[in-house]
Image (tube, rainbow, N blue to C red; front, side, top):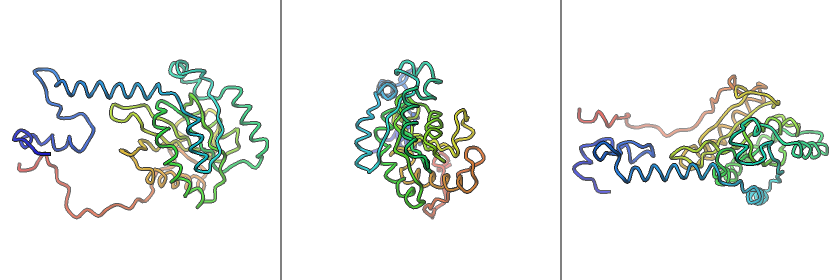
Length: 269
């Protein structure tokens, strides 16, 4: 991209090319330029669409089957999207039919499982559609390496984070991993969140969970997210806890920096 004399005098434009953050938008009088305003409205529309996009659990189930993973479909106590958005408490628990469904399944698997993976639409079914299978493909390598037994992937319609604890209890799982669509941002309508709990129990607060956020192509890569989650799970098994007392200290190989960092805003001063 060719630069204009104005570009060369505005160092913020160099930073703008490296981030989706809304900086250096310019102005027209006392207002934003038309293009910046249209971009904002488009991003806002994308975020709203992500919140209301229906959960394609059938399509996701087919993809999981291709990966070699069975799945179970359940529903939270929120009967529809309106109830889900108005009553967060209903999304944190299963409805009666789903509770019975999981009890029936667990009756034939009394030995329980090491790991239960739960997938919920959350506030962005788009994130779940795009990133669940690619992430689990990477995570499967760690599951096999550790020899952890796994329950079928439990798909939860209108689910929130805490519903995973109830699923874990009903299936007799030692650990539960929740994959859920995060609240859309104006530059990230498809951000996937991972929540991990050791020894799940109904009623646990977020203090007992570990969160890995912003899993997507433009954020935290599938491989890096799987590496961090596997570390937390191994440490949780060793220390028998999760949450605020379990820190993410996974060692990640990074590129050596051969030149010192330079603040371009101070350049030539």
